[in-house]
Image 1 (cartoon, one colour):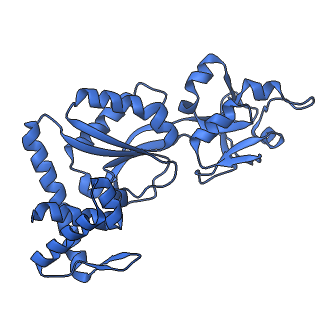
Image 2: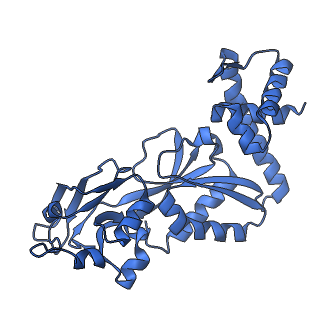
Length: 310
């Protein structure tokens, strides 16, 4: 039995919550994964997991062993990586998560340039608009846009995402007689607004008056909007806006090319939605990973030259 491999398998089973998930990751069978954990239990002389047909649970001994094993597996991986790279070359898999829109439009070019600079690194890029548990999914680092709620993660701020109100010119041209483009936030109540449900504010859109607004600069407003479409997908927000279905409250980068071409028009430019932070987060046991540190710096450098700025 390869004790270190069995230990690493045990750690991933606990993180993922099932043998089948780890078998899928490893391209092997559930039986093979179960046998590795069982062999480790025999060597240790203790029961690490209790198994039922529906779930797994750590025993008291398993809880103590898991925390130590997870740290040891991470440290050994880093030590081996240091030897292989001669303190310079990064190697192995790096699992990265991000939202779908940001991942496709902004992160993919950064991933491409990172892989070009580090030919022995492999990236597993996982895109989700919903919350992802980094430990459970075995993610090394994730780009998160917005305020952070999980204090158990190590976070590095890598930029700021600015937002604005936008509509496709097709929507604006199709406005019925008597309805005009919004001039102040309250006017949005007369329009069909596309709501992104992954934001805590949902259809309560906040604004701050700029220098050209009719209200004193710095005045804040929160307006409630309505519409016939809401979604948890940034890609649907983008597609619906480009189809002329309504007005969106969206990050600049989601429509930067279309705004530059005039296809999509910014509205209420004297009123600014509050900016939101962009962080690269990782589990605490990955905070000393050379690959994570290198990727974080690469992303931060790349974002410094885009519309997502500090």
